[in-house]
Image (cartoon, rainbow, N blue to C red; front, side):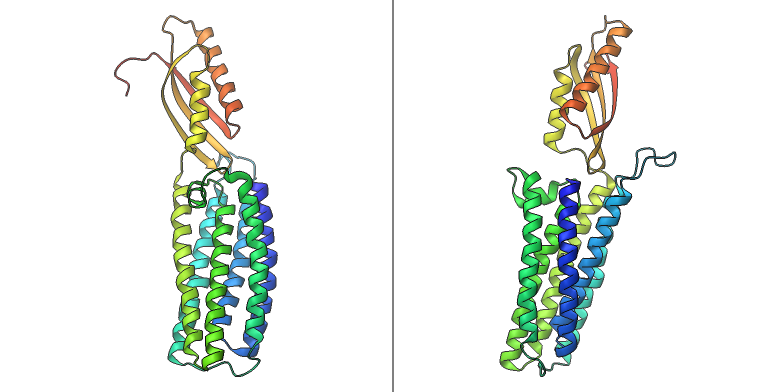
Length: 306
C-alpha cells in the first residue's frame, strides 16, 4: 500500500505545484478572488503532499528503547496535520477572501479570459492526478465501494489524496462557474461566492479527514477481513481447542499487533503447549503478513470466560 500511496502522492505534488504557479500568475493578472482562493488551495495541497512524503519516510525508522513498537503511526500524525492545513490555510482563507469580495465586489477588468484558460488547464492536470490516485487505490480496494474503502483504510496516503483531488476538482468547477458568471455579468459577487463555495468544500473535507485520522491515531483494530484470517489460522492450529479471545491493534498502516488467549488441553505437558503456541504464531504470520507483533497466551477454558 505504501508504494502505491507514495506514487499517488508524488503525482499529486507535481500536479499541484504546477497548478499553483499558474494560478498565482493568473491571480496577479486578474485579481480574481476565486483564483486567489484556488491558488492558496493548490499551494496548501502541494505542502500537504510534502508532509505525507515526510511522514512516510519518518515512519520507516527502526524501533528504539523509547519507541519499542517503532514509528509506524507517524504517518497518521502527518496526515492529521494535513487535515489541519487544509482546514486553516485552504478552507478558512477561501471563506475570508470570498466574504471580502462579496462586500467589496468588482469585476475582472484585465486579462478577462486568462482565469478561464488557467482553470480549464488546471482541471485537466488535476484530473490526471486524480486518475493516478484511483488507479493505485483500485489495486488494493478490492470489491468494496469507495466510501467504505476511504472509511476503513488503515493506510492514510491514498484516502487523503483521493479526497484532496476530489475536493480540488470540485473546487475548480466552483471557481470556473464564479469566474464565468463574473465575466458575463460584470458582477464580482459571483467571484466571491465561488471562493466561499471552495472554502465550505475544503472545510468539510478537512473535518472528515481529521475525524478519520484521529481514529487511526487513537488506535484501530485490524480490518474484519484481516481479523478473520488470524482467527481461522488460530482455530485450525493442531492443539488449540478454541480461541478464548483476541485483540488486534494497528501500530502503523502495515503493522498489526495481535494478542490472544488460546484454550489448550489441560493434560498436555509444557513442551506440547509450547509447540502449539509456536505453530499458532507461524500460522498467524503466514495468514496475515501484517501481524508483526504476536503475543499468545495458553490457558484452560472454563465457562467463566465470555
